[in-house]
Image (spheres, one colour):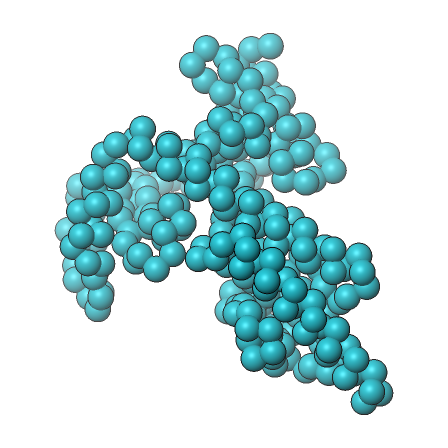
Length: 254
């Protein structure tokens, strides 16, 4: 088995296919969430193991690119609210060639709000200490997936009990995509369901229209960025109770 084996992917290739940072993929490997093979100082991931992580039935095929694009420069933009799950701390940065820095500074000059200086100072220190980042990411990812999986398992349990919900298995990020399939059954729009969930179940969600999906399909997104495991259990109980109440109301009005 060699590094050039076509059935093995590099950390960078896996990160590109999953839309994740390479540090996140390495954290998956260290935690055992993603199986990998150590070849010298490098990791390689079998396509079968990547398929198991994503829940796909068959290994991912190599990405085929039909167009050639010349790139003169690359600008990488990131923020702690995403890569470090630091919800509420609006601090980002960009890495770019020096000749673009002036133009970026002009753009940033039009931003109307700035992160507090202590947040900027602490983040700058943090980014200069990769060992601290790795330690934090291991703990962070463990907590993120514990919350995502609890939400997913809870919703799929409701589905198994006959309630009109569904969800996409977590694959990364701090969000869970789920569906409340009640359009045409007491609700005409996603917005009506969103408002009712907030008022009746005290659960805040974002409808998919916020992400340019025009149709009312009952799909929403929930964030786990600022919630504990016990609070998730309580929220799931409220969601299930609310759904049962809505279905009973719909039967009475039918």
